[in-house]
Length: 71
Image (cartoon, rainbow, N blue to C red; front, side, top):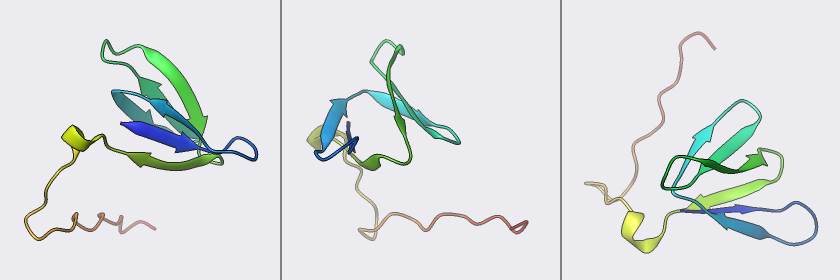
């Protein structure tokens, strides 16, 4: 997948195999599971799957996210 972020005036991107989201940002991993980067939420633009990584949904749309009742 491709992680797109904007640290200044221009967009940058990092190709990665996987990522984990944490409170302050996302940590990027390569195929071997090693950390290859970190992008804070403040500069994260979006994450795009590569063409072979796209998922197809039955009705064409991803499911709605679940909400906690505690909020």
